Image (cartoon, rainbow, N blue to C red; front, side, top):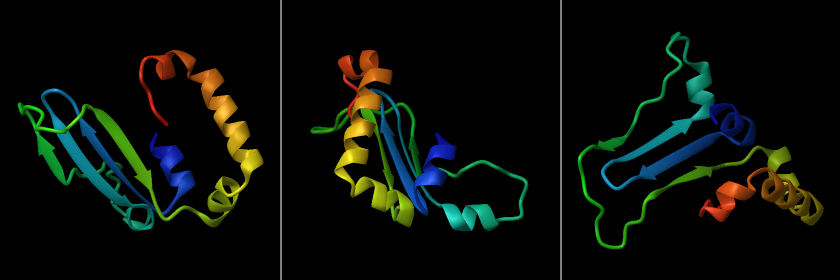
Length: 103
């Protein structure tokens, strides 16, 4: 997943919530790549273990990548590329989509 996010944009944010845990992290890809440390891990901004869902909260994971790399932004601006991507995702991930995965 990390490799895909690195290929899409310059920064990303992940927020994930289960029935009992929560985490959020943000990463600036260029700053992370420039760090000479051999540590290839990411830091969480927030972590909550042993928690309950609040009102209006739902379980799931959201991933946002922004800003997109120019070539990716151009691709997402093409209706043909989006149609091809949609078809490919539907075919490859049919069971997960039927189980509730939203892309």
